[in-house]
Structure formats: C-alpha cells, structure tokens
Image 1 (cartoon, rainbow over the protein chains, first blue to last red):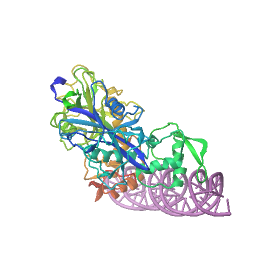
Image 2 (tube, rainbow over the protein chains, first blue to last red):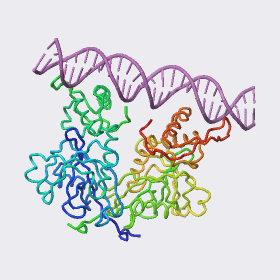
Image 3 (cartoon, rainbow over the protein chains, first blue to last red):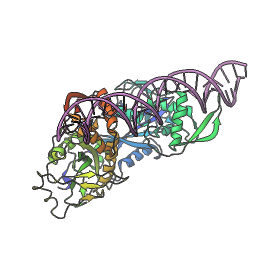
Image 4 (cartoon, helix red, strand yellow):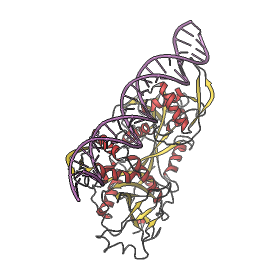
Length: 257
Length: 257
DNA sequence: CCAAAAGTGTTGCTATTACACCCATGG
DNA sequence: CCATGGGTGTAATAGCAACACTTTTGG
C-alpha cells in the first residue's frame, strides 16, 4: 500500500519557554486573538513545514515569533495526539521545552511572561509579570485591546497546554537534579557565584536548599563532572567576597553524586 | 491563515516491543519484504489514522500486526522527525516502548525476536532467537524465503531504528531503577520469587545484582511503596523454599529509596 | 569591632555494598 | 547429614542534611 493512501494529521511544535524572574520560575505565553480559545493564553507554536524537522520548526519559531537566536536551549518533551485536542482539525503537537536566562530577551509585544507560583498539585497559579519598559509602549496594549490582561491565571490555558505545562514543570524539576540544565538559566555563564546558582536552583524546584551544603556539595559535584571551574576571582558585596565560577561544559548528565 | 494552507507530513508510530528471553533482554523485529531497506530488520509500525490518537494506533498495531491484546504495557518514548528518515516521503514517527512477559505471546510468522547482548556503547549485538514450535512451520520460512535470516545483526536496522533502539534501551535501564516497569516482564504477577524478579532485573540492566541485598532491600522497597505483597506461600525447590510475592500496583514512580 | 555574607568542618542519619551467617528443604 | 539455595545480620563506606564555626569584607 502506497503512503499516499493514508490520511494523515497536521503536525505542529509547541514551545514551553522558561526563565527565572525575580527568583521564580516563569513561562512565556501568548494571548490568542482568534478562536478557538480566543482571549485565553496559550503556548507559542507553529506548523512543521515540509523542508524542516521538528527541531527546525522550533528554531524557526524562536526566530520568527520570539525574535530569539536559534542558539537557545531546547529539548523535546512529549508528543500530544488526542484526536480533538485542537477543535478545528486533527493536529498532533510535539512539545518542546526551552530555557532562556533573561525574560527581556523576548522583546515582542505578543508574548507575555507569567511566574509559576510555589504550586499545589495539579494546576499552577500563573502570575502576570509586568512588561518591561522596552515593550510596554509598543505592545501589551495591542495584544490586550479587547480586554485587560488578568493579573493571574488559574492555569487555564487553551488546548491541552495546561497539561503540557504540568508535565514540563515536573520534567524540569527532576532533570535539574542530574543534568546541567540549571546553567541554561544563567545570565552570565562565565562568572557566577554559588549564591546566584542556588537562587536559580531554588526557583526551579520551588523550595529552599541549605546554603552551606549547596556550596560544598553541589558546586563540587559540578566541578568533579567537569561542568564548572573556579575562576579565581571573587565578587565583593556586603560580607565576605564570594568565589566565582565559570561554566565550561563537561558531562551533561550524571547519576546523582 | 487557515490550517489547510500548510503542507504537512505523514505520521506513524513505531513500537519497540521488549521481553526477557533466557535471562536476556530481547526486542521484537520484522524483516522488511520491500524497499526501502528490503531484507533488513526494522520495528513494527503503522500510520496514525484520522480517527485515532497515537496511543490508538499503537493499540491497533498490537492487535493487527502482533495479534496481542491492547492491554499490553506501552509508553511513549520520543518523536523522530528528521526530514529524510524515510527515503520515500516525509514521515514523522512517534516511537513507543512496549513490554510483554513472554515472547510466545507474539505468535505471527512475520515477527522475530532478537536478544540484546551485554552491549558495548553505541550499537548492540542482536542475536536471533530460535522460533518457537508453534510458529516454525507456518512462518519464519515464509518471511525468509529469499535468504536465510542472520543468526545475529550488528544492530543494522532500517530507517533510524538503530537509534531508536539505543534510546529505548537506555530509557528502560534507567526507568527500571525508579519505577515499577520491571513487573511488566513478569509472566505471573500474582506469584513470583525474589530470585525470579532479580533475574529479570539483571537481564534488563545487563549486570549482576547481589542476591541477598536484592531480597532484603529491593523487595522491601517495593513492599514499602505498596507495589507488592508477600503471599505467605512458598515455592519449594532445591534448597530452602522461597517466599513468593504478588504484584498489587501502588505507586508507579518513586524517587529512589 | 561588629554585622553580614561566604567558605568550611562536624555530626548523625540513611543508603548501599560486600560478605557472612543461619535456616529449611531434598536427596 | 550435607549440599543447595534462600532469608537475614553485620560492618564498612558513602551520601546527605542540619547546623555550627571560621573567614573576610564593609561600615
């Protein structure tokens, strides 16, 4: 039987782009301006074209819709194929997780950030992050012409994106423990402190970590796996100056300790 | 822009069906009888129909191609979307892992089992498993009419199925450690011994585990997480009778110990 | 010199491993 | 009564968490 004999669905990629904002994990969403799910928030996504892989589609999405370089870290999460997940037509979506160190790298009016509160099980409390000076004038207003943007969403995204978000957060929180994912959140990978890295770590997993132990064990584990180096320089502040580290690569994955 | 304006690829599911045969992890493959990759082995797969999800397609595949009930354990693994992964046309494939306790449950001539040797990195040595009495007469011969089946394959499957196999084995080996996956390999989930479970465990991870510790700690961990019970009965054999256990469910996932 | 912040040490608990020992059965 | 296998104990080690102590700066 020839391939052409089969009917087949549309395929998209959806991106769960994360960052840490004010010590809280945050997700980048867009408000839908048309049906279905008009005025609800959803993940940025795009159809996969004939001449590109899913990864290619994600890179194009990053460039065209988010105005980001395609060097952004992304990884495939899971594929969603329920028949009616898009009420318009049969659409299968491959969800990707992305991480950027700074929300302001996304400087387009149609994308907005929401922090993910220290959540209870199941659904998350998404709190709108004030738009930056740079994109306040141009947008946010344009996207919200019809009605004011909510200050928070009780995790009520369009399509099956709520479910995707839950799975993504769970995945992030677990992979942080045995991979180098945390370094994707770093604004300056060539000079950071134990304190700075710990704050990111805490934001992602949503709980506190003992300061002393983090410096002693976690940083040492990263060093042992060739992921980071002590730079030798220090950062002065209120108290004793902090050692600084530099991310250099090494093993991306390890069995914890 | 309407959905219909987009060109879109075909979508299939491919199944990596595993079992343990003679204390070795094994994979169920089919020999291709047409181009591309004619006479090479590949994973069973099928196109996703309009009226079914990917999971639905996997269930249909299980039923129609493998003559298995759709109660077989399956889980989504990863989606493969490289443009030329199928030389005929643009085909995206969602790979699923499946597990059955007994190779003889697959009783069709066009499927064959290969054990996965204690492997080195990268590729695996797949060794053909002698077909069972029940399907020797009907098939194996039919499928191999053109040329004799190799006694082993140096992991040279059609399409990108080599890569899928590698990822699947890695996934199995790691998930065994913190999930109840191992119980999917059990022929009798209501009566098994520590010894029996350990042999399956060893087959999957490809290395030995200390007997005493497995009985003491691993079995206890399962009990503590509500996965198994001691039945109270024993199995007599050469030496001291072995306690038997029953799989009852409980948490499917736990953070190790 | 004192508060603040960061590095480092101590202690106890728990998990993991290796190994030994004892127990129950069949021959 | 002894070989065989299976359950259980012990000791050494390593990982982890809580917490205390020391170090180095700024005010």
